[in-house]
Length: 557
Image (cartoon, rainbow, N blue to C red; front, side, top):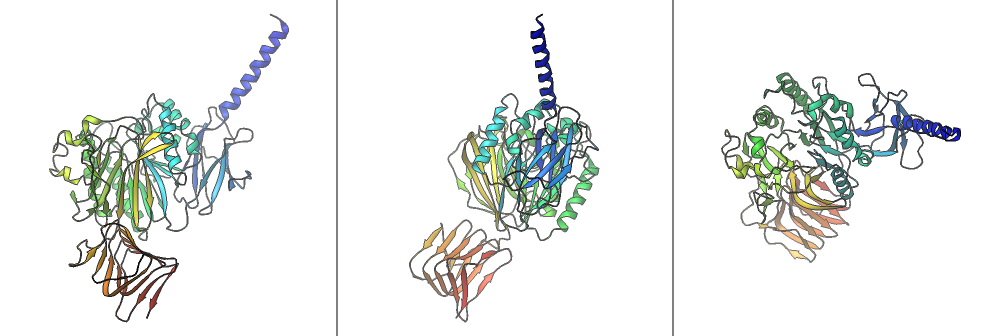
């Protein structure tokens, strides 16, 4: 062989080997996880394909030139040396940071995140479940891009399990992160284990960095507070071997832990639980699965006791809105504003859409379908009505909202404020287009929905932009906004804002009369709006009501 050619081959081989060595050590499967307190902490997890030392994370303030001011070494005490974990503490609330992981000469790309605010301001997050992508792995990228294109300012994303189809396959985990890596760089991730992920507890724990209590050896139980909501991720996969017997020690410890955490945060309004295996669902197959019944019996009464407001579920791959349920019954008077739509089975088996749901008592059970492409058309409950859950003969009546299955991937944007939770669910059309499937609102602290005899109920949102003399009582019900931009003379009458209703006085005046804002209602004075009260008039703000009078006045004559 020509000596020059041989030298070139040797040189090229050396370059390729050096390049492979660098590639092998460059971080991948990078994720940031919500950890304990999202106002001041963030957890990170990443892999390198060879056993490296000296791995660390660097943090920089803002998104400009990367100037590290925090460096944290990774923790490898309980993981193989090519799995790297780090938790950054001491961060400032509501601050945007940049980060990179790795080590000198082998850094990852730069990601960003924003810590939670140190108050109860509104926020939103993306909720998905059951990715379970098999061969069509590019759908992972398409779906994530669609969700975060629609909601680029969402604070984090929450996953209700079955991230992978085969949890014991490292290839599936690698695909899951590879195809969504850009979004793991910019949105903190709050997942829970599904039954497919539980095929390898080791893989689940090695790919994530979650702050779990010691009683959960699976590493899939944790809690955090964001805004005015307390979140609980709980593990529905704690079974004894391959039987249908739940780990009773885990369930006992879980209930004690959750009760303690709730008692310690009585000032938080909303309690949101998320898990994988459905407690209530319209999927016939799942309801006849013994494990779902066992899981239901273990947790549903406890949710009643703990006053859980919203339960986000996975596993069934269908869309359903169930409840609010208390003691295996729909809470009377808790649902209003549900529309009838002309959609056929299986997309909307209940022919219902939208609605307002009061969770002052009872839990709303919600499943948004699948973030993948696995659909179970034959297994909807309506195929065999009354068959599911034989011990609940009225089961179908619990399905108070939309129920069915679209043929597209779905995701939900959940917006949380002190007064309400709005869940907007979308079908993915393509990587930049989402189509609204359903939108519901949860409210709390609702007073009676019975209207006073002779009252005028405002049926739809409207604006009063000319002066009026009111000659009867006015009721603003759920889902309706009354905006007053002129002068409304109420004399001795009253205006009552019900739970889920809103009164806006913008540049106008309410003159005389009584103004009553019931729990769950909202009053906004803007643009120098005025409420003028006489000697016998009252402004009543009930427990649970929300009001903002920063740009208006309340005057006494």
